[in-house]
Length: 498
Image (cartoon, rainbow, N blue to C red):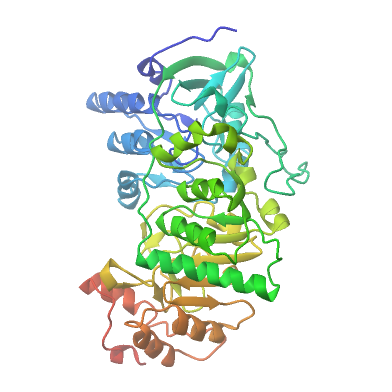
């Protein structure tokens, strides 16, 4: 079958006001990049005429500025799920201009198939090849691509020549049956392949091909600094001790790691610690540090939903593609983040907190309880089902004006029942088997910055009795002090001593 070739501007005309639109990719990796900016231009034009033009967007995770940024600036986004991270989008959500459903990434595909959001009108998918019989070979991201391709009434493919043909074979496309007919997901080790290297669709659904040569909108990460390096070393120290004690098998367990500067530093520290054996990863995002450790032999295999790496790192992968082809598999998100698989293979999850409290509750998403930062992503998919769940964060932020450990978190994403270990640059709080009172002592002693330790101790001293002592009148006093004065250093608890 010969597919119609069209410009990005022509392709954008197939996206109408009120449409439910599904995208490929996971992070900017594998997301379409040239059609959506043209959709934004249409929205601007329609708004100038006094017409409504907004769409509902469903993705694997975050995208690049060419999707979320362009749509927000054009006031073209009505509803968005499940995760986004660009500044313009964040501002749109916090102003109330965008209806945002922050949800667990592993659930997005199934909820679409279940009809929770209505019909999917069109899928925009980045690929490196499309065959006449409807085989779509994706680029650097898995996401929810198989589901949006199957559900959408029509598909437009961005054929991106920035990616080499040799990338074919990295993907393992598998879409599970829905309840009550689902069987076990047959992944028993990170390197298991259970599907096909392509998405199969009815070729008649593909209404157009847009050729492009645009690289992924890579996000550079900062080099580890003193704080993030110490956090990484503390994680390695904790895991090495658990291996020594026999809590973790001597062969080690697969690692899941979140995205960002702290995660990069943690993985680097694991690679440098001689007490940590070479390991596999079962995770949602592969970053630069993973590629470096693979080349050094410290990481043996990586299962992921995205090659979310810098431009230089992606070039390195492509220059050595035969080496990496046997060491990396890219999966759809509902497999890469699958709770059943995570529990079965015994992953060690390592994710980043915005703040945590003295009992081990973690806030991953909101500033001062109301302002969204990014979203929960896949952290809970792994945390709740991990063999050991670890959360990391610097003990302070904003030059010491914010304590990341507080009497009570202002928003709960991961409750105390799911969090096993809390680690800052100050130290390690192993919370396993501990009562709430024991947890509070360990966290204050080991994780709180010395500048805030007396303040939080004073809070605990005036907390009520009970299983989990709190003073509800004072629980958010440090937050409110920051809002009022720009600094959490509360100097007088007297008004709360009731």
